[in-house]
Image (cartoon, rainbow, N blue to C red; front, side):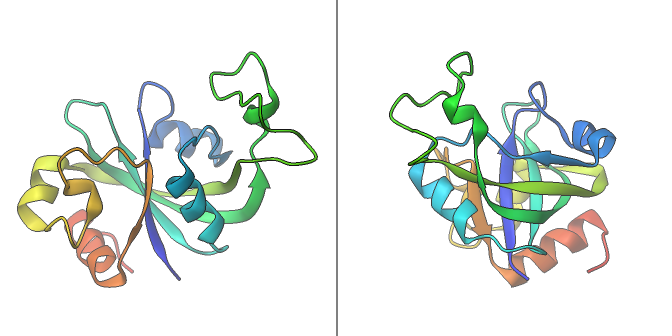
Length: 153
């Protein structure tokens, strides 16, 4: 099993929205490196749900990848902010995953605590200026994050 960190603004979609819905399609990613990470995900991988552009930002919960290599339908919708006019159903440019709720942490692990606990080499989200919305998390770092959140492996 691999671990990932995936960002969403809680005003757009939060861990509590995922808890209510059970599952969701993680659509709208429009960065090629983030897309490549989405393409590398496997069913059963876990992802930390990071609330970005929040006060404070931080890791709010955990989700599981339940479907991979899904064509992101928002790329074809001209009314969507994620519309890509260069993408076609015959040659889609954007793939994503379906995620399932695992846990909302009892408390947010704020970015300030993440920066105090991890180096940028360990956890990319603590690197100043990091804008990537999907990133890998090494196994040892994931174990430390789960310990901080008091979630059993």
